[in-house]
Length: 103
Length: 460
Image 1 (cartoon, chains in turn purple, orange):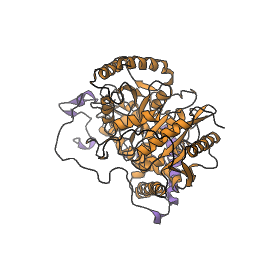
Image 2: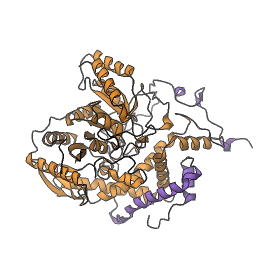
Image 3: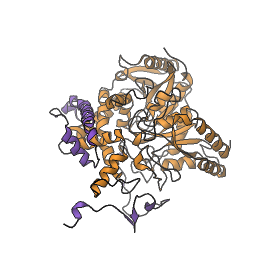
Image 4: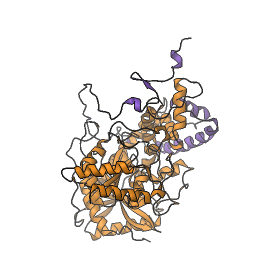
């Protein structure tokens, strides 16, 4: 984090693409400012000396018990078709993926 | 009182409290059905006839679940949360869904797509967040108890602002099945109530292993403890990092009075140190957005809610337009920060580092308890409830409202916020923190303090 450069417009747009999030042109400057504010704030973890770093920590059971890997169905009060914007023949319908289109 | 009578009374209180904007979904029919179901139970359960509201990120098959977001408009879950099923089996009426910060991201319940929740004592102020609707309903006397969820203090903080009890259990005590995921290593269903006894009974009814959530602990369900008559023999640590010189005067006075009450009840207090406390909020604001960015990837316009097609008309345009339109400003900000800290080149610098600091924060608590204290006492919040709009322009200022609560979530510990007085008419909360799985010790001590410290007394 020490050599971190501030986040610019291009970086915000790049991250938004990674997150599949449309960002309007008129909100980019504000997002740049707010992301810099947040990332500058969390960068204070730099002060914690590296030689004091412990192993990553997660709460909860020491060992997570795994269920047997056998397929089964969870009873549902209503089918997926009742939730999805478009659903037919057991499939969620979406527009064609650009890369899969015929040239 | 019959279940049917509770349903009618709850409905009339809900109508009277409409101005709070604390509720997103309820109907007389659903409440009546719950009342009739409870009346038909062969034996009254431990929560017989208790109406319990749910934060709108806990699913039922009867009511919609929106998480305070437009992106889940029209969604009703096809299954019921384990916690809800257990409360119903214990005799509770569960049919009211409470307003919340969108996807539980916020500290003031100003981030709901359905409008902000008002503080029951002062409509200009916020009830805290993100479970502000649940807190306001309990504080206004609409329901005796409500479920919220905590990722970084989202029940204790609003409990403190609203003057009610807020109980967060150990991570793994209560199944997360049916709690919409935000930060999965942090998320905990938690309880609001007006008394410590009610909070303990509700938690006991929900607790216990669940095969549908592998992070639940394989232990017998918790029992609600009998309150202690006094605090003799109990050693309570006061972490010096939680009592800064610039702590709000009313909060400092209320905590001083709480400390005196502990000593009058025969308990002892002494200063301890949690040296990494100042890093809790920055650690949280790396870990939680990172987990959120992954968890919220599922809202893409394919499987739930409304769909926006986007200008290019392909699948990416559909994802981007649906998510860009469907999520509010704070959720989008956190998804961007979470994606940034997980992205190539930054993962080690942010996420891995934060996970290691998280371990140091958890270790601080272990060492404090190992040094010979049974519980810790801290303020729950640095100030009483603030005014709406006061912190909405600066995300970091809003995050700092959780400065005394979020370390507990990082460490997975149980804690309770108790109302311990009022400053200029606004409630002040004191927080007790216990070692992992020591909810019974925590609740027994909290119940003794509850009797000794007047919740409504003005402090100076």
